[in-house]
Length: 487
Ligand SMILES: [Zn+2]
Image 1 (cartoon, rainbow, N blue to C red):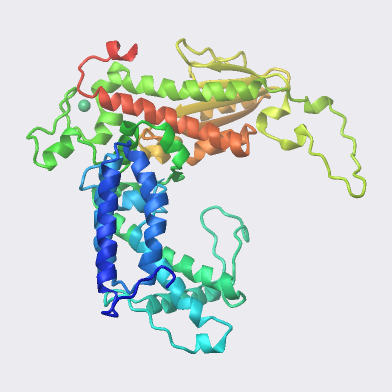
Image 2 (image 1 turned 30 degrees about the vertical axis):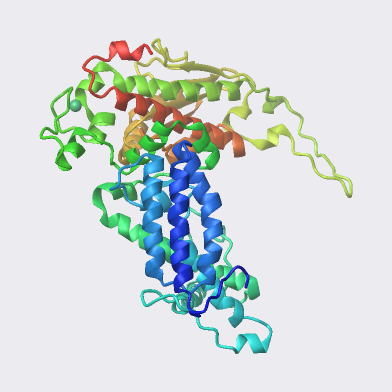
């Protein structure tokens, strides 16, 4: 019936064993398929999960059995994505972490389906169905009906609390759906969302406890969603490095020492304790050798490319444009003009740009100074100057780097303003592991980039930092840097 089998025992015991066997067999076949790991992960997400979910929903399976299945799946997924067995599952499934993978948890999907199944007969318009008292058995560990009623009381509570603002959000910016006023499917979806949120909250509180693997909970950066399209582009080693660098499970000397594999946790270059943070952004010898400078220049090059395309765009000179009112006839759509789209560099038609790459930057003839910001954009005609300073710090240190650069150029800014130039300063940070900070988004936003162009540009910055860090990581044991750099 509906894909559910009944046998003479009239229980689901045999069928459940069958499902377990199928999952095992399926994992084995995928394992032996000879495909690269990321394709195997895709087959799990889009092939196995949806198909097995139907069976898990139909039969009366206790949660503990599903958790056992989950453990098998996790083991395979870790292998396919190239992370060690000790890698926290939160890294694979979390929907609110810094790095979000496009994978779903079997247990969570199971819970969602069961909750949906609790609500469907209960909310039925047919009295005979809604009063039949359908029971959902999911073992002693977890009850679907209890989960649903808990979610419902949370939603009632949220109605009382009302809409809350997060961060610098404006009042009423978020759409707030009231539980009391919702009906039918909308209501059910809200409950399911609440159940999912509960699961995510549990994962999050677990990751705070994790210490080292949960260090990302202290970052104050926009999170990064990894899409399948992105995964197709990345080589297996980059996927593995990306995951392992965020959760700090790379075999750095300090980690190897803690795992009991080596005795010496010291850095090959300077002799300090070689944690991942030390190798990628804290080693004094590496700094002297110019390794971090090299990474910084890689990201700067990308940023300069992006700004150069933006600068070369034809834009009207606002001062000479006649501002005529454009009337729109009835039934016609108003056309947006280029000038109304805004952005700092749309204010003047000619912009010049200097970038501190390969040669010393000479500050334009506005003021005399020894300071050299990474990029200077200026327009003589419009008397405007924009200073951009890029930093590629360790993710935890983004806020600090921002404040440091802000104060460093404050005086220069004042000098420019004293000569009647309009001057702006934008310190932008891109985390060493490929996480652009809010300031990088803001920088591009102010320069007039929008929507997809902006998103692509930020992604490019992150990727440049990540690729360069990947290179630094692979060269961590080499004493000299000059030779490696040329590649
Ligand atoms: Zn060192």
